[in-house]
Image (cartoon, rainbow, N blue to C red):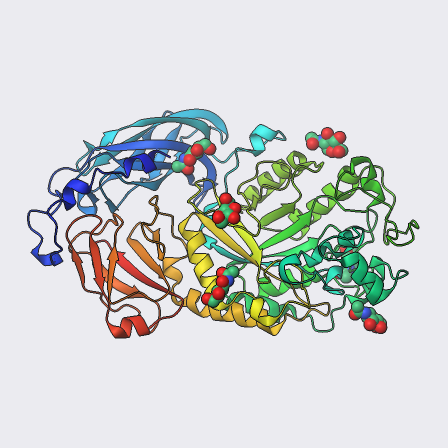
Length: 603
Ligand SMILES: *[C@@H]1O[C@H](CO)[C@@H](O)[C@H](O)[C@H]1NC(C)=O
Ligand SMILES: *[C@@H]1O[C@H](CO)[C@@H](O)[C@H](O)[C@H]1NC(C)=O
Ligand SMILES: *[C@@H]1O[C@H](CO)[C@@H](O)[C@H](O)[C@H]1NC(C)=O
Ligand SMILES: *[C@@H]1O[C@H](CO)[C@@H](O)[C@H](O)[C@H]1NC(C)=O
Ligand SMILES: *[C@@H]1O[C@H](CO)[C@@H](O)[C@H](O)[C@H]1NC(C)=O
Ligand SMILES: *[C@@H]1O[C@H](CO)[C@@H](O)[C@H](O)[C@H]1NC(C)=O
């Protein structure tokens, strides 16, 4: 918030002298980098619940560092070190920055550990102190308080909501979402303007005149006596190849995947205790634990992939959901929409309470037995026992040195927000993950969607770059067919995008957003501690002017990232912040596809 107000006007003075000059001719215009360094502010620091991945629980304190000066840069020459002073904490990994342009800010992390005798989870406070080389003050220190050490979460909303998404999730950027279940048998959601989620087929069946016309379609295609549960036997594993699935996700460049384990129809495709429900692929149809097989294949063949599980909190027509039912989730038993006859809820086991006896135990199974990294719930606001699940699960994961995360649809605020079939048009500071299908409007497979309506490699790449530049992750959905095959058109789009993503990974993964909105549409930016990345959506022209105050300084190396000219040096001209121009040769322009990326490596 504070930065948008800073980024107006102040650097214009630097630009007042006009015409562009080559970087090596810069004289009077050169910024001051010789003094001790600009005055910094530490803004909005937090003692987080996360630790450096792979470390011995080195806790992360995270903050924005703001350069208050309107001319002077922070450079590596300043030797910035940010540490904490506290009676509870020692600084283990001081915060550093190699570059911070005038009036800009960046995220910095400091690693700390409790002093001897201070128990993990102790309420504590600390002072955050920025210093330049030689222990000269670098500006204003800040106070922070919170929980020192990676302590226990308690079964309370407040405690569980103090959890933060782990850095690996922020680094991973791109995941594959999979909607696969009984609804893949009819695979119908209408087309054109009226297209809608195919995985909602059973619910649409009950809505005569609804835009998907599923009520009419089902009657004509299957007849009034064919009930939704009759599709169970058409949901098969005939072409299901878990290794081929996870190899595809890896080829796609994804870092995680999130299959539906149970959608609103209540049909689970994982192995949950039959004393609470037999409505699953383990008991009906293929008699197979699909999630178990998929996770085993990932762990064996693509162990870098993190594992998530989509889980629907309610079930539309579960008889035990009746006491909680409302709106689209009335509870059961289900009825035949044509005759009104009451139907069996196949696989139903009588329980006392839906939340306590079905939802919570199934989530526990996913959390502990399947060992998920991401609990991706759906239908926030439905009754739940998430605090009871989350606190012991987070503590257990911590004891196993694992940092797990959950979204904002489990009934609590969660670790990240989840825009659906839309994206944030601006940077949003709270972590978010946008999802959509490769289909124009369905997560589940819709056999009617023509191939040319699916997202292409180019669409995926542009969307990913756009989302990542705004602090988001992209969870891109595929809808496998009823027999476990993944339609060719989906595979093609994923592999095309994967080629680009793998070639440009350093400009995507492990990056952070830059808090400046691009001045012209095709530009996007990402940052790391050592470099700044400029992305151009689509082919750039030979002279690419960057109107935004990118933190370039003479002496930095500018190179092409990805494509046939990867690593090639790019000549630039620069006459002050906000006036960088890249000179691109024909080979560079012809050397890539979809999105062109350039790296400014700080000297
Ligand atoms: C610290 O937490 C507050 C409140 O959740 C948030 O607004 C702020 O952005 C956080 N600071 C950082 C550096 O993430
Ligand atoms: C379901 O399977 C039956 C028997 O194999 C077959 O006759 C029917 O056409 C299938 N229906 C669908 C929707 O695939
Ligand atoms: C499901 O779990 C039960 C109990 O652990 C086990 O006996 C059974 O073989 C599993 N079924 C499948 C299909 O994995
Ligand atoms: C757990 O769920 C039950 C049933 O919905 C509810 O009565 C209870 O308040 C919930 N407990 C918590 C801590 O959420
Ligand atoms: C982003 O902009 C589009 C088009 O104007 C709009 O439909 C969408 O709702 C916006 N997204 C958000 C999260 O506001
Ligand atoms: C995908 O790319 C095509 C061709 O560039 C474009 O017409 C279409 O609008 C894009 N679709 C989306 C959803 O971005």
